[in-house]
Image (cartoon, rainbow, N blue to C red):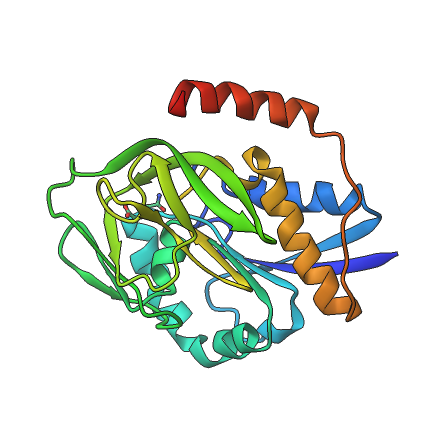
Amino acid sequence: MHSLKILHMYPAMLDLYGDSGNVEILGYRCKKRGISLEVFKHDLGDRETDFTDYDIIYLGGGADFEQQLLADDLLCLKDKIRAAYENGTYFLMICGGYQLMGQYYKDSNGKKIPGLGLFDYYTAASTNKRCRCIGNIVVETELDGEKYKVIGFENHGGQTTNVSSPFGTVLAGNGNEFESKTEGYCEKNVTATYLHGPLLSKNPKLADHIISYCMTRKLGEKYTPAEMDDRLENECRSLLFKRLIG
Ligand code: GLN
């Protein structure tokens, strides 16, 4: 039986709107393909974690308070996390996790939280706490050469700029900034997005894209996951698309 390892970072602190569900969806879809997904956790103060040991590193979303609390811990791990990224580990990051991998996040109190600086983008929130991007969002991205609509829910004060390769084009909702045309950040081994949902339950093809990437990397040859019965997921998606983009 094949196996993959995922490292869930700060699971108790970065888990907004059911973001941990992303790990469950990956586990479920792996299992259906005969792959066991082993889940490991990295918590505040852990110093022994070898980040290069994992196929996937996952960070969920978090409020300004939690982001502030874990920023120093994250900074101590900078070189180790960079090594995993350069080694090809897949990084999936949602909202607060996405922000923390950039240059910095200036929160709604005007306090600058240093980011890991893995990527060039940076984020600043309005000091008017009511000024937030909230609501359903639809983004069009490209997965393995095919266009795919990604659906989710956004709730962020942070406005992210200097994004060199966005995750997708906004069809409904805000995205990286108020009324932005672009959303998130991506590279071949990175998906960073504002979309909660949880993201992967609403967008099964994205989960399979991550599984394909990791298995192909592991096996050294192209891996294509077997089709699954996604009728229910697809029906939900059609209904939501009708409602949000007509
Ligand atoms: N605290 C950040 C913001 O408001 C991230 C929020 C989130 O993860 N949903 O922008």
